[in-house]
Length: 385
Image 1 (cartoon, rainbow, N blue to C red):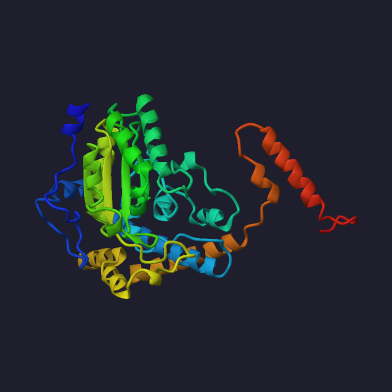
Image 2 (cartoon, rainbow, N blue to C red):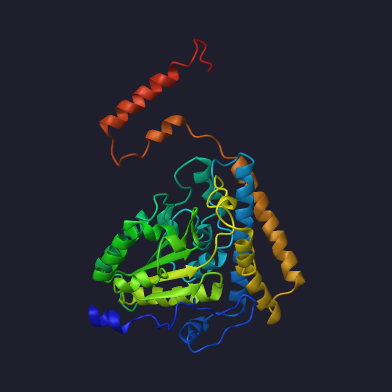
């Protein structure tokens, strides 16, 4: 195992500067350091580049609509992804159909790349159910609200894939990788360290993808770690790389490289995508209480969508006509999101007892009966509430 891991290391970096392929000003970065990653882009054509831009624009529009719906009282809560589109679209588009993704609770862009209908994501935030999609059909697990716990779930799933013989066969339609998404705050949880440990010693085919958006709610990364987060992977013997999380091509290239290592038997990778949460942690949060407008302005100048738009226009791949057509598509998505959410019915209160256990449980049955009697106590003789 040790020899295998040593032979499949991620390209070495000479410093902690995030690997970058497209700079904030839209120019392509050509260097010896990013050459191994630039090679991963060889299979992309002009339509793929335009597709990255379209994906990010549509996901941002969805995010805007969802935030507005929560402010209007249509959602109980919402976790915005504003500013993290490149990290999610770039990594999500690197996944193969058979790969499995384990998200936290703001991976709306990754969900989109896995074919999940964006409006269905909001069933959870409206309180209608625990997730509005088939996780097996989309190879995209339900959202996880317990910080960091799903990194262990992903690692365990990857170990299962490995034991099922779905790694290193040479069949690109069968070999499977697993990816887990989490934020910088989750790295302070013991579960993430345990996942790194299990992944390393078992050579599990899992990519641990950390979106370092600088703030664990109101705690900055500087108060969580004395070293860049990607270095934690090195301590466990896990190949690790730090990328510009606002560079969609860098995120795609790094994730493609890591997933290929996992599928071919090379084991785990830790990716730190350095990005920024432009909005609130959730709609119940007020970021003005703990960060400055100057900081937000700094990151606004590094907007992931702006840099790709500049690149496309510079290379003659995008124009005003294409932008106008995309705006029409985004408007249609916004209308669809609003209509869907406002049309969601209210589930029966008794549904809270469904699916607690795989089989009937006497305690749940007792609680269900009590609740039914309690509800019936509010019904008058005519049957009206």
